[in-house]
Each structure stands twice: as structure tokens, then as C-alpha cells.
Length: 345
Image 1 (cartoon, helix red, strand yellow):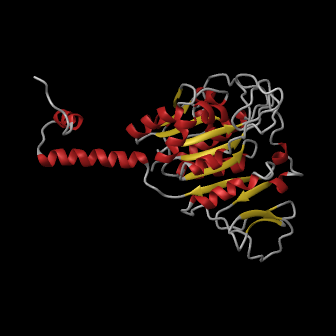
Image 2 (cartoon, helix red, strand yellow):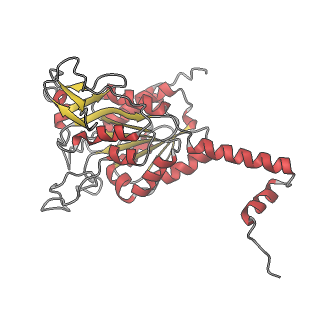
Image 3 (cartoon, helix red, strand yellow):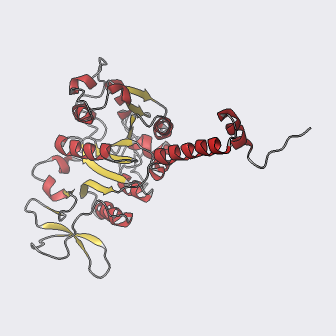
């Protein structure tokens, strides 16, 4: 393939970037613009589709094709585009409110179908655009403008949700960790099918400091559980914490003071076909929400919806030609009428 010679600046538009000063979206935008040249795809073959929310301004700032669509429906619109134009690289940019509230149904069906999309889900655990109401990922007891006595809702875990929908690629990263964010983006865009990347993103106006433990150099080592395929899942500032498997039940948990060579320590397998392993990893944060597994949870191969659809269309066309059913229009009418249609005189 010919090197197109694209640079990060080629993906920047002339639009004023309008997020609150200090918003984590700036860091994500810079990382994505810096990463795009790696794809070596012409800008006219890249599309960013968003819904509604702070994150959904993204298409304005990417010098590619794009659409700022309607609340929660970006996966549906992107599905139609990806299925009809397999030559395009299609991204969906969404937020925890857009994707997991009104858009929840569209998201899970895109995931289960394995449409060829890269979905970037910005999670700041708050509704930022509408000025600070609790969102589907806000922690229980969260005091906000819409929950002055504390949220009663049990929050979604986006990674668990995606894995429950049988997503073939699921990962998590952090807005301020550009190196890790870029590594995850690289893996996600190489994946054939739906890839979902949850990005912890700080809203410094309405939920500032939500991820401080994961960003502070003194504490991040004790709370980020790094996931690296083929490596033991060890963490902690002194590397003595680990994810271990109970030999009797097979359940995963976090243990401290784990010696080298301990057979209970889990070796991460992002390519495990059974999603229950990745799901168990995603639940490690449930007893203590400060614990945050980061990296690629699952990356498996399964035919994409787009490929299956186009194979089916090719098969139907070949069958029509073989049987001599006439023109494409005749074949379409035959398909629509089926065997149960009749004419009333």
C-alpha cells in the first residue's frame, strides 16, 4: 500500500474546539488525530458518527466525513453506512449517557451483530452537556442536580454490558494516558467487527476528580489492573498484587502479597472464546469500584455482519443469474412477494 504521507495536522479542522477548558475530551481528540495517520487511510474513506452529548462534537473537529446524528442512534446510523459501504472505516463516538441510556438498545444490537465499527465510549459518569445530572454509570449514592439525596440506581459497567452482548472486542483506557490510549486504539481499529473502547474521561466541571486515583502517580499502580495478553495479571506499586483464580471454584479475585511463581496467578488471555473469563475480569471492580482493569479484555475472531450480509447478497445474485430469473428488478419483486403473495382480481 502506498504511504499517503498523512500527518496529525491533516485531521484537524478549521472549527473552534468548544469544550470546557480542562475537559478530558481534548486529550482524546489529540490522541485520535495523532493516531489516524497510522491507519494510512484516505480521509474521504473515514467517517465519524456521533449522537448527542459533549463527546458528540467530535465529528466537527475531525477532517474526515462525519455526522452529528440524534440522541443514542449513532450505532444504528453507522450500521447502515458500514453495511452499505464496506470500503469505509466507520467510527462511532458516544458518551455514557448517549450510549447507555436512550441508545442502549442500539448499542447492544450493534455489538451482538458484530458490525464493522469502532465505538469510542467516553465515560465521565455524569451528564455534562445538560449540566450535571446523574448518568447510567454514576455510582450509587451520587449527589447531583437530579439526585439531591443520592442516586438509587445501580450503575452500568460498560465493559460487562458489552461482553454480555457477546462483543468480539472490548477494551478500557484512560483519557490522560496517551500511550495506552493509542495502543488500545491501534488494536481496536485492526479488529474486524465491532470494537468497543470505554475511555474514562474527566468532566472537570460537573464530576471533577472521578478518576484521580488512576491518574496520580503515587496511587495509580495500586488501582489500575493492567491487562496484557500472555502476561501474568500483576499490579501494585510493588507488583505484589495479582488477579488469582480459586482452584476449587475457578472464580477470579484480587490477592495481595502474592509471591513469584504462585500458580494461582492468572495469565491474561484476550483471545479466550468463552466470554465468561473476560466478564469475570470486568467484575473485579464491583467489590471496590476503585479497582480498574485496563487494556483489552476480549479480542476474538468472528465473521462481521457486513461480510455475512454482502456474502448473502452475492449468493442471491449468483442464484438469480444461474436460474435465469431475469433482471435485478424482477429478482427483487420475486424476493418481496415470496411464496405467500397473491393477486386479488
